Image (cartoon, rainbow, N blue to C red; front, side, top):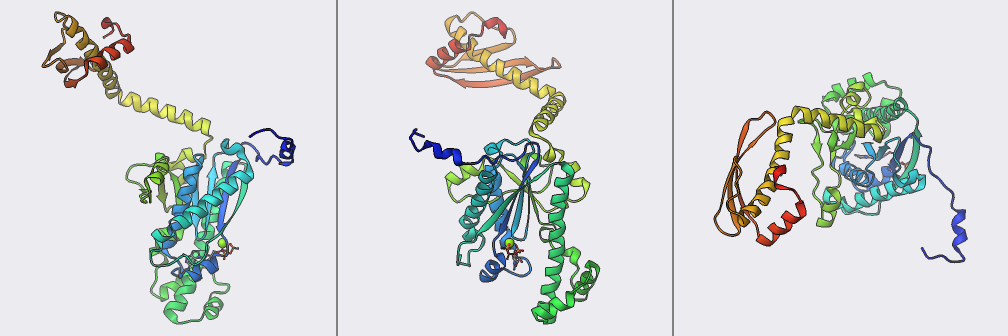
Length: 369
Ligand SMILES: Nc1nc2c(ncn2[C@@H]2O[C@H](COP(=O)(O)OP(=O)(O)OP(=O)(O)O)[C@@H](O)[C@H]2O)c(=O)[nH]1
Ligand SMILES: [Mg+2]
């Protein structure tokens, strides 16, 4: 920005970087969504099309790489950022405004995709807040609070609307009937109406949990499969794949299954390094094979160059011949880490000029191979 005599006004801006080493939670909530859902004919108590919110949350996760887990239910979504994230200088207003605007924009952008038969009557709005949580335990309690809220509201709403839809009660009669009832009683009312609450979909009973797909275990969850509307957008979306789960996040098994979600970035890097080392040891042969393959290929190309210059040079374990000045067929043996012999067959097509450039660029003396 060019300097001017007005520059001093910048000093009036206050720093709003939030405290270090705390989890950052960004919570977004639909503004007056009771009205919005009514006006747009959302199915009661739960509308599967309202999963548009998952799509919007996915958009937020694309721009927040340090967001390890997001949890959503009804018209709200919480995004958890690692405690040592330095994204956007941990500035409160920047983070909240970015998350809210991205969520709102994606929600509108994909409206027609999820609600093809319902015109958007007016633009929805979302509010946002940032809260800091100083420990794993408190963060987990926060998420548990949101999931318990989901459970309580969903059980109430399912019973409330079932009484209206199946028993013909008015809204106020249904409300009165449910007043001061416990979960057990609501379950019984539902049972009398032919509904087993346990059979309701997990997505509504438990809400949606979004995590980075790098945490995916075998045969688990679905990776976001939403189609992008333009190639520009798909380039953007490929930045990060997200796994969508509808699971319990209150009890320990979820956190034991995904231990990286609560770790600081530094520790995640160390854990990944350790994992890589273990995988490498397990797959030592394949790894060495790739290395040998790489050198063998360089060797082939360089050697090919030498052969073209001096046709008398040969290697004991490799046999090649030139079918034309530009092509070579190679049949060679290499040794894997256990000194087992592997047969390789290559058909190489190289322009002589590229070959010379490659030979010069590699600077690899013949005896290295
Ligand atoms: N019918 C229907 N309504 C939904 C669905 N999801 C969210 N809602 C509505 O969204 C509301 C969300 O509740 P709140 O966030 O407490 O209420 P709000 O009207 O958004 O008010 P503020 O958040 O205070 O602005 C619910 O009460 C429902 O009316 C859905 O799938 N179907
Ligand atoms: Mg709301």
